[in-house]
Every structure is written in C-alpha cells, then in structure tokens.
Image 1 (cartoon, rainbow, N blue to C red):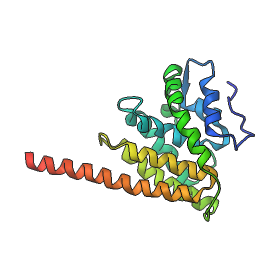
Image 2: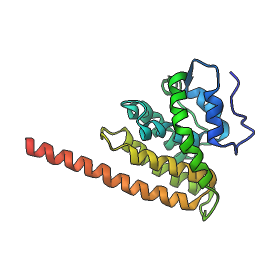
Image 3: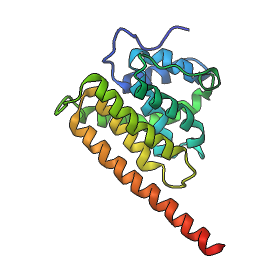
Length: 204
C-alpha cells in the first residue's frame, strides 16, 4: 500500500499527516501502516499518537493497548535506532478507521494549537543527546502510563506529547516544560502508589 505521507517531506506537520490518514479509505489502520505513512519522522509522531488516547480518555483501558508500543518506540529512540521497527505482534495491531477518525477529530485542534506555539529556540543539545534525553524521559513516562494507576495517565501522556513536540522543532523552552510536567507526573504517580500502599497496610 502506498504511504499517505511523502517520506521526502520530513518537515510535514503531524496535524497534516494525521488528516491524510483520517481521509484514507482503509477499513482499519495498523501500527505498521502508521509507520509507513508517517515516514522518516515516525518517532515523534508515534510517541504523540500513542500518548493521545491516554490524555483524552478516548478508550477505557487505553494504556494497556498503547503502552507496549509506546514503550517500544521510546526505547528505540534511547538506543539511537535510525528508524522505527515493531515486532509482528505489535505492528499488526490495528484500530478501526471510525475510531481512529474520532480520535483525530478531537485531537487535531489541540495539536494545531501546539504546533503554532512550538518553534526552534534555546536548543543546545546535539542530535544524539537530544534523542537520548527525550527517549529516556518518554520511556519513563510510558512506563508510568502502562502501570495500573487510575486517573494517573493524563500528566504522563501530556509530558510525552510536549517533549516529543520539542524534539520535532528543537524547542528548548518546550523541552523544559515537558521535563517539568514529567516531574509533576512522577510526584502524582508516586503519591497514588503511596496512598494505595497505605490503604493496603490499614486493611491487612
């Protein structure tokens, strides 16, 4: 199947790529199709796409579905892989086009607002240092999202989106904002688990 996004246009905005996918005629969209369609910049778009359902609560238990591929993509960014690769059991996972369209319709306005705000500034990291820094932060946040922490997925998901966008445009200010959100996420998740542990101790 031909990709929906031209791989020779690496600076194409995520919102445009997602609209192209939304307008496609396929019945379902697999993760492999996403990778093919998004082209050379697939790390950042995939991080954002997998984080979105956890931010907007589109699907109950969405972290169970999106957590493993999100962890896998972030880990590959840490390792410095030149392109995203998913094993068959992840790459063949798919979502119905109707559900994907609902997610995109709701998410696009927010993504477009963010894209208007993010731009190159205050960026001091080399290419590899940026990949490693962003990859580690997104990997930790993706693990937080995959853990059974009800109501604790919003901040980690937002952190991944902000940090990923900062990498795409080399925006140091947004990167700092993403790290601040990550610290807040860590505090919230730690608080939830501490409260749960305290409750368990009182019961037993």
